Structure formats: structure tokens, C-alpha cells
Image 1 (cartoon, rainbow, N blue to C red):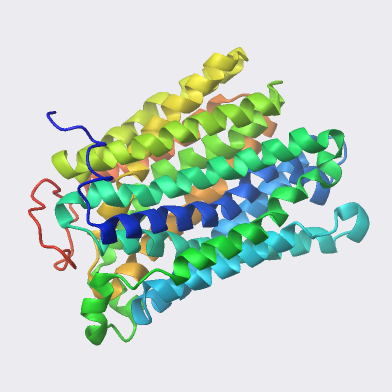
Image 2: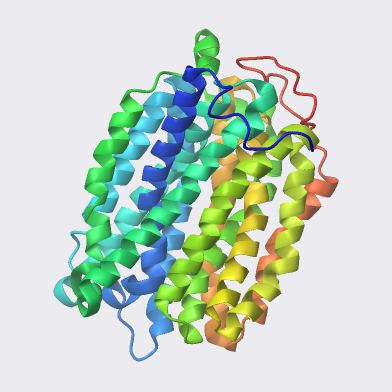
Length: 444
């Protein structure tokens, strides 16, 4: 290659493009902080606070992760609702709604009484708030992506849109750091009340995120098509792009399943084999920081060689790395554990970094928000929501990582087969702003 992938964001882009990308990254980071906070806390502490079990800590953790799965089950519903809003009223209107719902639900989690105080009401309220979080997350991803993809030149769409995914990764880093700091600051009181501090801090994050998004303009792509908007975006996208929806769902199995096994179940498995929570959190943070950087690298690469080859490399990487990930964790050595996370997240980055541009090119502007949300979130509900629950149940039943590694590799196989055999092309309308020479991005 003759051009470095980090070359151009700071100087070559017009100020309007830089402002849009930075606003998308900041908004995504703050919103996904809230969503990932529950996922990490569920593996660390929420089981003992809200789902007490008799003698077997894995049972309480499974219950807490079931709450994680319920949140994922709500994501397709949120995708439908906010996708409709985004396609009818605009991307900005949908994003203001999602961040308001997410911020309010997360803050209220920090105020909930424990099971010891309120009994069964406590986990019921927690699950209800997680459902609201899931609905907000279901509408968030598509809007955060479209804020960039509908405002940038087509020949740089992969590179610039990958910053949206980078914001998601930084949201996980921020939530993990918040829990680590709370655990360090409160010590033995972490289980009693210290875990609440990162949830209550989301009140400040909500205000900042809302301010950022209120000052965003509407995307150029939506503005151009506003007079021709679909009366029923859901009905139209199901009629015009059914194969694209199924293809997008299949693409999500590898990264969504592996992400939550590497990010969430790994904390459960590490505690099971005696690795300290500090080592696990920092390994996860290190892996996700590398992930966030590599997303941009792979996004830029996809502008040159195409979306599908880069995505396929990531899916195959997950299949190859599923068992070595746990073998390295079994050593208990800090360096080996960090290596497991770093390599795993590089494979994930090859898919998540390409996803924003890849998915946005599958659907026309009239129904793009709805189409992306349906394909992305239906698969997230299955692969992302159920994978850590299923993995923890497999560990409880067998006491070994091998079934979990096979589960991870199986989900990656679904994505690999879709990329190899599914011939899905772009929508007819893929250049909403700048019809630049996008010849290096052939879609499967």
C-alpha cells in the first residue's frame, strides 16, 4: 500500500464532515456507555444484588445475563419504532429520542433497591429498565451510522463511517473504566452500593450527549429525499429488500456472538478459573482499545479492496481464534489473557469497522434506517443476546470451555457461509450525497 490509513481525517476533510464524524463518535460513545454498563456489571456484580442464588454463584450470574438477553430481545422493537421515526421524521429526531430513553433508564438503574430490600420487585424493575435500554439501543446504531454515511463522499465512506463503530468501542472502554474505578474507590462496599456510581454518572453523560445531538443538523441524504419519503418504511423495506435484510442478519452472527462472549462471558469464565476481576477488566479494555483503532484501519481498507473480503477475513478469524482464546485464558498469565483479548478483538474489528458502510449500501435512502435496524437488531437479539447466557449455561453444565468455543465458531460459520454463497447486491440508490468513484467497494 502506498497510502497510510490514518492519513486524512484531520486535514483533508471539510470542516462540516469533521464536525459530523466527531459528533457521531461522541454521541455513540456516550450512548453505548450506558448499554455496555449493564452487560459488564451483570457479569461482575448484578447477579448477587438482584438475583441471589443458593450457593452457586453461576446461577445468579445466569439470571443477570438473562436480563442482558431480554434487553437484546427489545432491540428489534426499538429498531422498528425508531427506524420508522428516522425514515419519516429524520435521523436527528430518532437519535434525540434514543439517547433520552437510554440515559433515563440507566440512571434509574442506579437508584433501584436490591433484592434484599424490595424482594421480587427489584429484579422486575431491573428487567423493565433493561428492556427500555434495549429499545433505545435498537434505534441507536442505524441513526449513528447514517449521520456519517449520508454526509460523506462515497469513495471514503468505509473509512469515515468506521468512526461510528469506534464510538461504540470507546463506550465499552468508558463503562469498564467506570466500573473499575468504582470498585477501586469503594472496595468491599462495591457490591453494596459502589456499583451504583457509574449508573448514576450516566445522568451527566445524558446531558452532554443530548447537547451534542441537539446541535447536529439533518443528514444531506435524508434532506434530499424528504419529499419522497415512504409512507410505511417497514412495509416498503420488506417488499423491496427482503434478501438484504436476511443477508444483514447473517453477517451479524459472527461479530455479535463473539463480541459478547469475549466481552461479557469472558468475565464469568475468568472468575470461574480464578483470574482476578482487575486483570479481566484491563484485558477487556486493552482489547477494545485495539479494536477501536483497528476498526478505522479496516474501514479504510474496505474502501480499497471491497467490503466483503475484509468482512470475510474477520469471520474466519473468529472461527480460528475461538478455542485459542480460552486456552490462553486457562494459563492465568496476565500477558496471555491480554493477548487472547487483543487478537479476538482484531478479528471482530474487521467486521464491525466495515459494517456501517456495508449495511448502509444495502438499502435505499427512503427505507435505509428501517432496513438497517431490522437486519442489525434481529440478529443481535439472537446472537448477541443469547450467546453469553448460553455460554454460561454450557459452562455450568460441562465445566469446560470447549462447548463455548464450538458455539462461537458456529456463529462465525453462519456469517462465513453467507459471505461466500449469498449473492446480495447494493440497493439502486446508494449515493445520497457525493456520487464519487466508489469502484473499490463491490458488495457480495
